[in-house]
Image 1 (cartoon, rainbow over the protein chains, first blue to last red):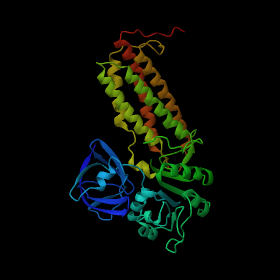
Image 2 (cartoon, each protein chain N blue to C red):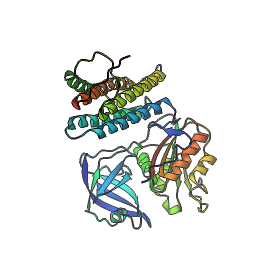
Image 3 (tube, each protein chain N blue to C red):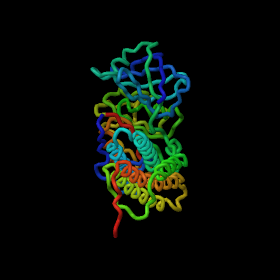
Length: 217
Length: 190
């Protein structure tokens, strides 16, 4: 298996417990938007989806800092110049252009592949992002500009003119309210419970719909 | 990491190409049977002892080929995913033919039907042979459902050749395993 050594170039916090970390892009490293990389560190392996080619010379991932976790705290404390070992990009969660409308559904940092898709040039999609607070709407402006409809979903969300399509509730409730009958390709990335519930909803309401999933537990 | 997704609790599952289909769908049966065959190959390998490393390596190769076939079977023709998968090809079935010829050259000529069985390893090789034939039948059924479709699945034809050869491989392997263990083959007496 091919491995690469990457060097940290910068790190910025998106919220109190989520950060984006960037690395130099090693020579020969290729990937397709939506694919992920595996970090290997002292017997620990962790997968993160690449954010996309904002700068061709860099790789970036979005990481939720898990207090007491075995890897994310170490990554959160990384300094420019620190080196990590990664595997080749892998996975099949990439955008497929069809005549169906694409519906992207994310929870939390599951937004990463959709950032990659948008930076790839994908447009005219519906995007639902389930989060706890408005501050967790990572990359919101960039995604709202690319989407046909950008719909933040959260339970405790103040009405805001900034997000006219915000939904007070879970992503499956938002789909039920805003998605007209039709043929869709659904792309789901995030917590397993969301994927379970949205897939059940698609099976029930959108027979013939295609579902692509990337779950983290 | 949890391995249960709970998305299939009502009898449906997702193809690699995204469609949600019932688990009784012919495509699901095709790669499900291939998975069963792969497990049987693993069971066969587990019966082998030291000194049979060459056969063990062959079986690992076969298991890898079956994964490759299963991935191909899990996407519908025309799907973009297939462009990133490698279909089974001539290299794989030619390799099987080489192994078949190698074993067969060392075996006495067969003049009657033999009952499947013998040593534990040979019995598992016969199990693998019959499961392989079942996989083949389902892939034929799948190919028939694809007939006349606008997007032909050329990979299926290659998989069928491979399965046909693989079944023959398990047959001669079973005979080889019995002979090398000193176990007599039981002839069918009618």
